[in-house]
Image (cartoon, rainbow, N blue to C red; front, side, top):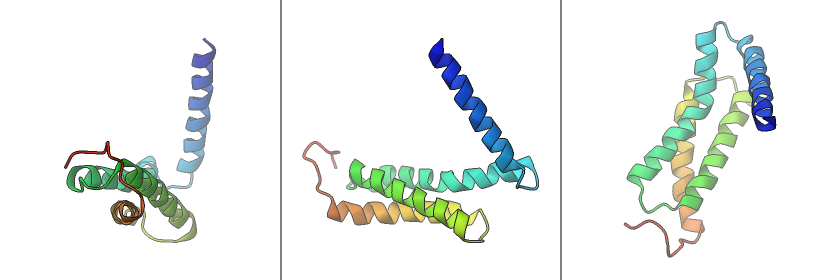
Length: 114
């Protein structure tokens, strides 16, 4: 019961936070698109690396995704560009950083089969 109450409280805090964020957008659809653009590009980059770059290991993709997401969030708060560009930036950063980190990080013997 305590866990359910905590999750209800966390969900309430999230809903209030999103409502405050949505007040900055012109309408709810735009607010959802802005929020999605911040996160969906990196998610697409993760899928592209998983499907097409089989030689890239999990650690490289993980750290690249964190770095790409951080980059997108910093850019959102510091630059004034159209929010749809964050999809492309997040995806490209995740793929490029995954490839770059794979050259630096050691590959484990139990990794994916090629």
